[in-house]
Image 1 (cartoon, rainbow, N blue to C red):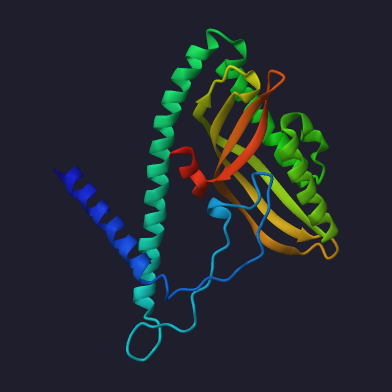
Image 2 (cartoon, one colour):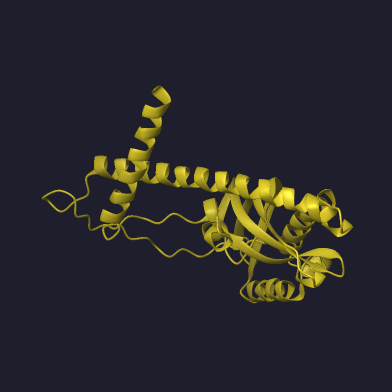
Length: 253
């Protein structure tokens, strides 16, 4: 009975949070900070997103100023909604991972390139090599772990940053969790693919290479979630695409 009441209370808060966010959407404005880059995609998603500031022209109360108590309640509910959303996503990931691993066991019986332990090892290697290549401003060392299009995309981004005297510093890189969430086996092996849920943790910030000062990002170690797509290239699995956490719906999650 207690569990039912607790669950009902949580659901009520989620509903309230959705309503509050909708009602106050026009009353809170966000700044447009410099986007932090990392080897996990075009921009730092998830917990790496810079926080915006609230508008100075509040609409709460009769005197035209923001009520601090209302603001605090709003941010608490908003944070809870984000937490609840992350929990729901992870449960979807667990379900998708269970089905994907079951399918991989069937594929392994007919094709050794589908052996999950070998694929998992390859994904782990790719994660660290790509991140290190990115922060070293030299994607050449990761060329064999990426398809041509993604490799060129990353290389061009690094060149752009170099021209603008920027460098993305990544430290304490750690892969916390990975799970397969989607598997596709085609008659043409070069069209085979696997999507992985990737949870990592690192320090991620951008510096001005001339002044050595931090331009954006954070020196604190923070976690992030992304989805990495691997395809076959001459019987080797290579990284071909990266989605941010808020793009999970593209994978049906």
